Image (cartoon, rainbow, N blue to C red; front, side):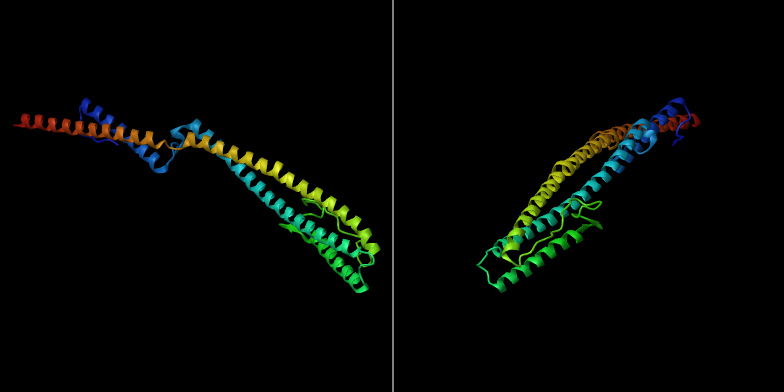
Length: 255
């Protein structure tokens, strides 16, 4: 970026001085416009490498956070399914207690209890078989499932005696289901969500560290830009003054 204004050593010095400040102005303007203090390896090779490594770690953490978030969605879906099953067992037990009222139900009422009981059992078992998340079964204990819930068997409310026996089976199913509800909830809260919170904090810290290395300090950079601008203008003014003086001297010599 030569100006070629004078041929003497003083003029060359002023020209180089002006070029240097114009170059610093150009760099400052680039940092201010991009928002980055490191726009190329020339701005700081070691710092750029550190920044890129931090960005790689940030990318890995971001993906792990997304994976954990998806896993939380799976556990929430499983928890909702377990709550639905728990509600069905509560209704079934209440029905069984009514059906076990020996001598209090006529034949038609007892048959109705049996029919409704079979419907609830069918719905319960069907929920276990079909509940899934993203193509993976949720509560049947298969690979990828979040919980293991056994299907109901031996439930019969068609007579007071069988209804009384069914109550014990239902209570056993309730105990097992409650254990699964507690386990799923505890795993989601104490393992997955806790780890997710830790990952987010780690990512925030890395982002802050990477920003400290790579991002522009606008206050400092604008101050640098103004300083270099003033010094460049002063240099250009000196160059103009130097040329004017040289032209005046040459004019006097010619006359």
